Length: 265
Image 1 (cartoon, one colour):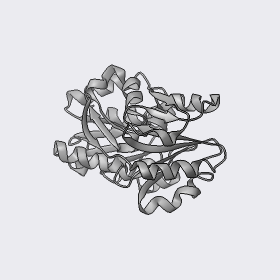
Image 2: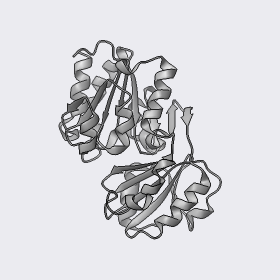
Image 3: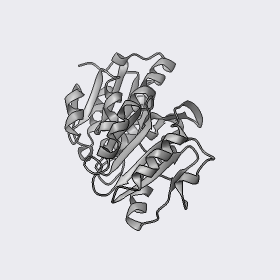
Image 4: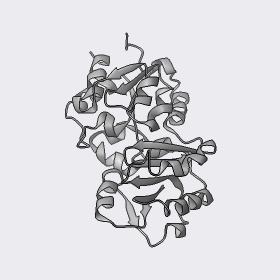
């Protein structure tokens, strides 16, 4: 295996680059600097909010392309490269369905901020991990002055078994992704990390053979399909391991940095 032609690296964050405590290992930053010295484009591709990603990677935020909200919002140095918003009327339908599902908390992921209508402490503690800017409102149906990048459910009963079945029928028209054990993400049909990769590959004239990606969950599937060097983490969902060409060590074993170190040797 040779990494001499790698020009673009994209990694998911939670369960991938970040450890189980949602932290970046200190060894990442020297390796990141070597990537930049080699002229390699680095993309943080996550279901997280853009503002949260920028804070998480604050030390290098001006050198990272952010594919936030599962690729529906791609930003570099505050410049919007790509945006794929979801129809507000469809979002209304999704909200109404969510109110019939026990143990779930709906979130509208707006371009300006996230909106929630519940301040339950356990829910808010989960929310703060992924959203830097949010507002608790009386009724999500009344939000009209923002672009909706994604609709998310925090499902404390387990997204794959509890809430996903209620939205499975939308898969023909929308992206419906189980993005974590307690997270379900719904967005525009064309909004996914794979589409974000296509936009960036076209913009920077990079081929799939020059692209390396890392992921662990179902919202990473399309992104892994856009790269020859597609890595599933050892801790990844079984379906992600099936489609990835390679396996990296787990997020708690610093698997991403280990592979990236090989590129820059």
